[in-house]
Length: 182
Ligand code: PRP
Ligand code: MN
Ligand code: MG
Image (cartoon, rainbow, N blue to C red; front, side, top):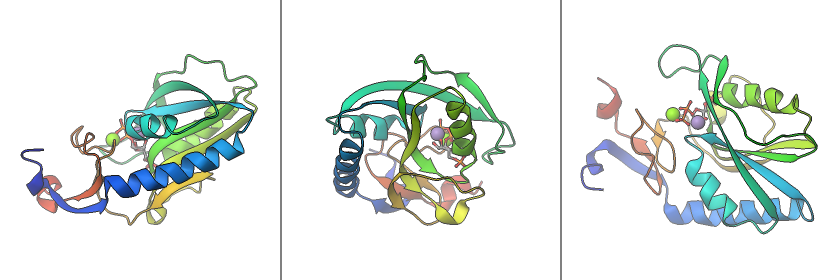
């Protein structure tokens, strides 16, 4: 896009790399859920891209639902205390739930979400995330499907935002310091 060039430091994962990994993740999910119906739960808004790209690669029976959550706390730091802004439409009782996320950073959002969804009587709950920052983890979350482990840097694109921008980039890039340093 026209004026985004200067905002990015470097491309971390190209659109092609993301696509190849999504193919692999989808094959694994198809195998694991063969003969079952899976409910994909996308966490708005970051998960929109991975949800769309992953769901289109699946051949098992898929339903899609969405949740919007917000963590209380100051600025960009998540506190682990989460508020539901939009709840699921689906009843989770007896369902195979697969939470779909763009990134696991501290792990606080997912750790809360996991116990919240597990309390609703699902048959199973697993997690698929495109990215994970192992060095940023404040809480260990057991994640079944991880696209890429990435360094603890400020990344945007493929659903990830900085101040709601850059989500539409088809690749994952690191943000240039001048963008967030003022
Ligand atoms: C981001 C990201 C994950 C979460 C990860 O969402 O999409 O949902 O933070 O952080 P954590 O592991 O430290 O909890 P954000 O709250 O920025 O909302 P968004 O998806 O609308 O951008
Ligand atoms: Mn998010
Ligand atoms: Mg965000």
